[in-house]
Image (tube, rainbow, N blue to C red; front, side, top):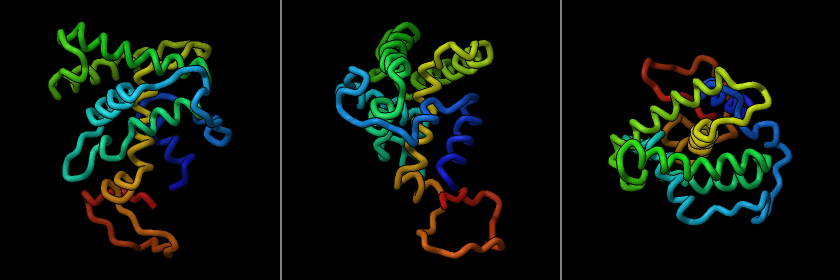
Length: 187
């Protein structure tokens, strides 16, 4: 599977255009990009959000794939300044929404409370996407969800343990047996 194909699938799953996708071939790099800095606490927070979206089961979850670190790098290096501001502010908005809904921060919330909150935010983001104008900014939760999926399924644990994987070089076998319930292919 090629990167562009994966981005299209992620966009389809999250109901919109993958934020930053036009920039993936021209990412910038450096600690001061956009003027925003993510703290270790921000990265830990993003790991918990990602783990709530893709929890560990028989396969590793998003935290094992270090998706929080991935999000920080992608936002800093590949997002436009305006999208960086939205994403960074979204960390605070998500935590405030949890405090409002549950009386405690996201990190203090139970897994059930976290899941309920993110389900509500996902619906809010999808409704926003349907009604937004092209010049309106993206919803912060859409960015977080897209980066979680992209970061996990392009990581070693995501590609080799959650998906089926055969190291390249290999050969194409169009008649390879498939049984209902088998994992999707990473390669």
